[in-house]
Length: 160
Image (tube, rainbow, N blue to C red; front, side):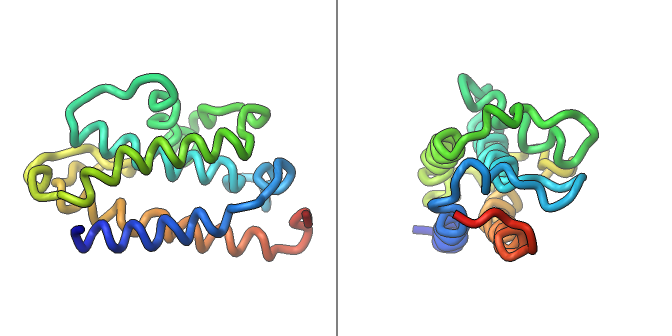
């Protein structure tokens, strides 16, 4: 297991723990205009993972991966609409997306050496090498786990 894998596993588990048990109303609640809901944030997190790993593997996304890859950027770092309609974003879809993405990431991040010299385009635009890819994957869920904590403790957040 690589150092990247240890970090990614820890922060990914904490992210999943932060959203575990949230209901439809809770994952759909928006703190204020211009922010992501927890559901959107979860699909974005999975989307970044799908985007990065499919690029490292040199393959096109397929099925649900296509919309997830779009969720890495659309409606997040640009002015395009988020690729999932609010009514599509359910706790079940969130779990399916996170599981799909984790299953893509795990084999690569656990054995990163063969990917270190490959290059991808990151969600924010710069071209990064495999080492940079794994570094970003390792901390990204933790960034959003902190946002989830701020949202669920905000005044007005729906209680279960």
